[in-house]
Amino acid sequence: MSIRVLVVDDDPLVRSALGLMLGGQPDVEVVGEAANGREGLALAGSLRPDVVLMDIRMPVLDGLTATRELHRIPQLQPQPPHVIVLTTFDADDHVVEALGAGADGFLLKDTPPGQILDAIRAVAAGDPMLSPSVTRTLIERLRSGPDSGRVAAAEGRLALLTDRERDVALAVGRGLSNAEIAGELHLSVPTVKAHVSRLFDKLMVTNRVQIAICVHDAGLV
Image (tube, rainbow, N blue to C red; front, side):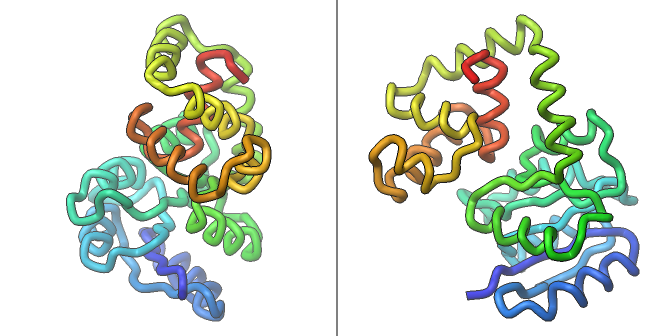
């Protein structure tokens, strides 16, 4: 079954290039294109894509706001599309804000085509994907140390978890995949997926990267 992709970018050349690149893949189907975030939200609601490639700077509605609103569209709940932010900008605030808005990946537009395809397949399978430069940015942000308010908030959210959910959250914070978590904790992969879904609800997050940030903010990894 093909991964259904929606491309949202105000540059027609970028949309065309992505369409040509993805169109030749047997497991990926571009189901629609939008020139701004508002159009992207409307198409996402009607087309129900698996993955959205979202630009940041667009007219009418920017990609960060669109990503945040995408997770509030009733007809896309409880499993909204995965979002990969694809941009020319890798500023720290863009990375953190995109992940906070619910993006599952953050790639620069000069990322090689093969890596973009890998990212689409990874997020469709439930794993986050960040370009190396973005990963470094996020790591540096975490290493700089959270302020006391973020520490307290993270600790309070993690206190709501059962012991097993906490074990899974810590493993996610270490960057382990569902299969790796299953092997380490002696659980089945479906059981791990169920725990991760409960973590989304209890921690009030929308993706694994946000779980990892919460765990790091609490100083547990």
